[in-house]
Length: 424
Image 1 (spheres, helix red, strand yellow):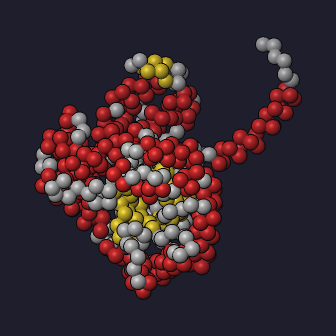
Image 2 (cartoon, rainbow, N blue to C red):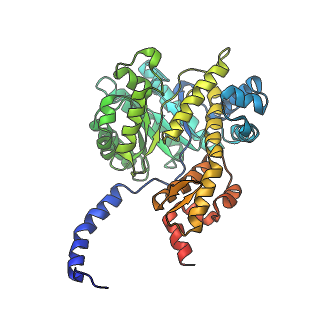
Image 3 (cartoon, helix red, strand yellow):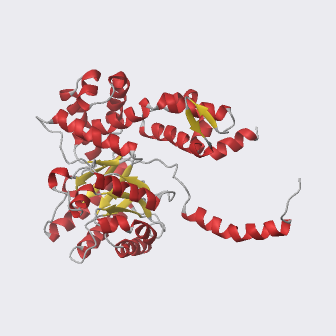
């Protein structure tokens, strides 16, 4: 076949693009296949104990037992499809018994408040010792972290001192074996320099205490319009330490001038912030977490609060945010019910599309009236990976639904699956 460009010309064009493409791939590696917790539970540092996660699970189970003692009542109380009641109810209870909290944040900020300096010193030391006990006993949540105070002029010394005491105590008692997936959450970030300052501090802690280089991750909490607008800069200022970004809806909407009765996750201002977060961090592998619901499910408002919380979680999931905050143990059943129902109700359609796509060797096709091309293949795979990770779907259930082997599913890469099948 006749062509116009010489091999040398094509090589020159390719050479110009190579370094730029390599740089882009390094900066935007794509969505991480690592597990993302479906929530973060914030609890005041003064309340933290090694058995905190299990205690929260027991309280969550009790709330279901009292306020929704059977599947249909549970579905009605929360507001999800009653056709899924049995499956969701069974899986929620199993989750609350086995792993009630996926990510727990020992909170020295809003959940702790302003206390005497000596008291915070004692709590910073005590929580580190309690976390060491929990790690040894296997009772900690699979993801754990500490939220320090903001690095503003009035609070920065207190924030760094609390972190110093916690990490120094941990290293003295437990050595360099950090809890799995440990992060330091930095709240109310307004400028990139606050993130780079925390990264500098974490560099020093690793050097002085013997932790592996880069092992201390950080999490940015954006709660202001300024923070949202400069999020990309902030993530870069972390120098590779940023594991996730949390959205603080109530501080954010207040800063936007939204009046108190309308400060909630469904407000259009929050939609804008979520979209801006996705645009700023798309492809970086940094996990995004939505804000929380501040209406607590306590009598006599349990069912109404459950419905309110469910609506928020559902909106987050539809917006592409697969994680959010939880602040009360009775919110945990709603969190898992909402996530499980979201994946289960979309399972049949996603299964048909993925299987149809694979059967046609990943060529553009129409399944059930929906056009799919190669760009959607990874998205369909991610749907099932997230469903497995959160407990909505088991691995044995996933194989017949997807038409993929467990080895293929675990690879997390649609392109690699296609390459492997072509080479068979």
